[in-house]
Each structure stands twice: as structure tokens, then as C-alpha cells.
Image (cartoon, rainbow, N blue to C red; front, side, top):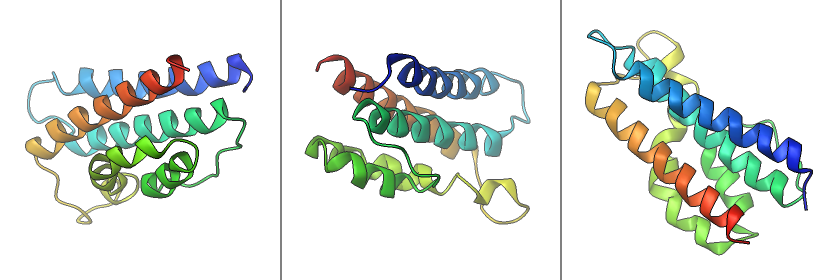
Length: 130
């Protein structure tokens, strides 16, 4: 199994991104919806990479959550359940960081937070039930 300290660093960073997204979502309008969605994508990316580290796999330097999920699915086929959430969150890796690339609404932001929490809970359950 992976070095516990490195695994914990991945999980802590993922948790920190999600907590930051949740905090920013409480700000008065205009909320930075694009930033919140980006943080949700980042949180999920770090949790997926943490799972790979947990299984002694060096995570690739990619942002495509579906590709990371496919790597995780080779270890645990239950990861396929995350496909709908990860498909949505993947779009927030790069596009919101540039003008006019992706129109993000408050509903998108709320969904991104909900999806990132689903990913977080799933991966923590898989890691700590082993």
C-alpha cells in the first residue's frame, strides 16, 4: 500500500479545495461561480489521484476526470458509478479559466459542489473500508 503521508496529502488537498468551494458559495452575489466549479473539479481530481496513490500507482499529470476514473475502475469496477458526475466536473478543469469559454450559472455551481461531495464520499469510503 501507498505511503500514508503522501496519500493523506492528496486527500487533504482535495478536502481543502472542496471546503474552499463551499465557503465561496456562501458569499453574497456576485459569487465567483467559475472559481467554485474549478475548485470542485480540482477536489475530485485530487481524490481520484489519491486513490491511485493508495494503490501504489503514480497519478498522471492530467485533468481529465474520466480518464482518471478509468484508471481507478481497473482497480475497483465500482468507480463507474461516478461517470455522470465526473463527466460534468471535467469541463471545469480549464474552460472556466478563460473568458467566454463556458457559461456557468449558479445552478452549475450548486451541482458542481454536490457532485464533488459525491466523489469525495465515494472515494473515502472505498479507501477506508479496505
